[in-house]
Length: 232
Image (cartoon, rainbow, N blue to C red; front, side):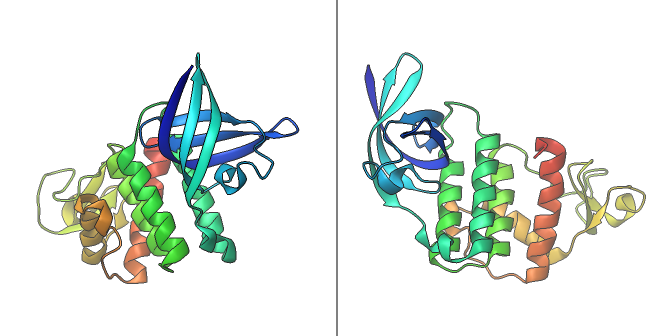
């Protein structure tokens, strides 16, 4: 039997028998794994077995199975519990992360993005719309689904970028976008915001000012992009 030490967040925690829990973790060096937490319903492991909890884990691996040996919580994001809308938004982020992450493949940047977003929402009172726009668009880029933002996806022109098309995979100039069926208008502010989120360091994800209208534009476009390319 091998022991693995990793920092990880609990993406999902479900009852497993009368006393145990089955945890889905996203670990820094393990990626997404399923772990049996013996006595997970008791005070032995406490908050460490709850959704959202980010902890130091010691996990025992036997064959292809993982079981929890020890957990020490680092951050439980308790601020989410006082805001139902924030809690629901955070729960959807966990579900999305579990959906897009392959098993046992570390995703350190996506994990950092998730943790920073949850912290911003729970501890810094960053508006939910800002957290959603940042998290989902940054996640897209980290997963390799970056849309074209610098030139027209149809003709390559860098001027007059005023539409976005999911089918074309990015922005369109006013001339090309005119006849594209799924075009969505995009403002200069929203386009600049998307460029910022895509290229900025994860530590600076929320270091910008933007109107709610631009955030809604980014989130609307990102949502359509995710549905089309990730079927989520």
